[in-house]
Length: 425
Image (cartoon, rainbow, N blue to C red; front, side):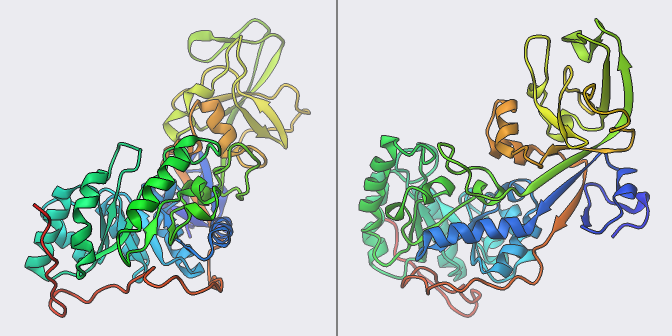
């Protein structure tokens, strides 16, 4: 905990009881992450997917919420498998949680095997070249840490083609292959009636069934809510853990996770007819009182949420009331129209709420012209951070995973050599 403003590190985490007044001397805003809400969301998803295992996708710094803090809280709650995008992300998570399985979605590159082995994590392999290179490393080093195989069923992004997947099935069924998961990714799971969902499900079910004894995973956050046929042995929620609505055609079943507040740095009055902000795109239609707050697009509050004389932008909660943005959002500052507030309801140094208290991630995404994923991952590094909850969490009792749904981490290479069968030519 910081005792003076100068001791607070850049974007440093603060305990919930930290002195926010001191923090604000160094930061323009405070970002609060509710770890208990993340745990509650994970448990809801886990319950929805039982008997499948519920993992957690914590790439991109846990969608901007803090990979170390989130992985530690979810591990304490019982999560046994995590997905990240890069080896560097895996390294950070492994330092926080020494036991769970970690998969790296970005794939395998030649000469990276030692990095995987050193932190005991598993690549998600997406083509035959990667698989061949991984095989070479395993044969030469004796490493048996395991890997996932990603099969493309319609995304046309990463993954083995169906023909390539069929070609390696004899190798998989020969045993001693080191593949611990076969997975694919849904294209439009958030659209309940998309014909692509049924098509991908049929394709994946057919190919995955030929990977004898290997657990299968297809569903992302939205895919979990498509029902049991999509859940297989393991589900991979990401955005839903952090409060983004996985069912945009219905009410959000997830708890909000992130709250963002900013400091008022100045109160000022403008006369009717005066413009506000860059470009003079917003004109006061009456004598107007403005609150200027110390957050802008450099902090991840997108310029697209600005207002002008013809378009109303996003809103901010000031003294318990929603107030509109006035003019363009700039790099470090936003002007808020607080004319309708009672006198002295807002003063210099007071906090306003940009996210939270009813303003959801999905609402901001609408104003930003994007999706909740981008809102969370764009939140800047100039906030003081407060983490609530997540300590001493009791794991949720759940049924044992299906046979083969998880394999223990392998001992180091010196103790258990491996020699997987060669790839098909």
